[in-house]
Length: 92
Image (cartoon, rainbow, N blue to C red; front, side, top):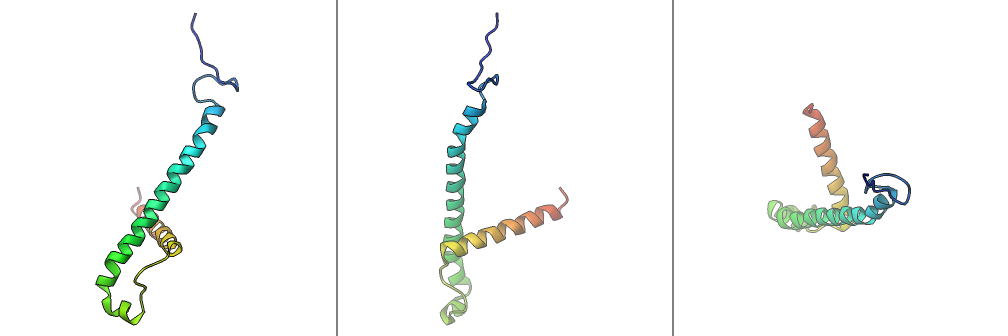
């Protein structure tokens, strides 16, 4: 006689509906952590490179020396779109 594991919703195996629902908060936390890390990286790279690359423009106020979290978010989305377009253009 062979035992079959059945979840509370009647589905066989360890990956029933209740188990998948319990994974959602962890997946949301990991997604938020990756997004926060990406935004922090964009902000740090901006503050590190832009004032050295364009010192005259920063001094005149043409380019911001630092950017806000919202501007970093928009820049990260822009970079992601460009990367997606470049990947699609290669014809994977």
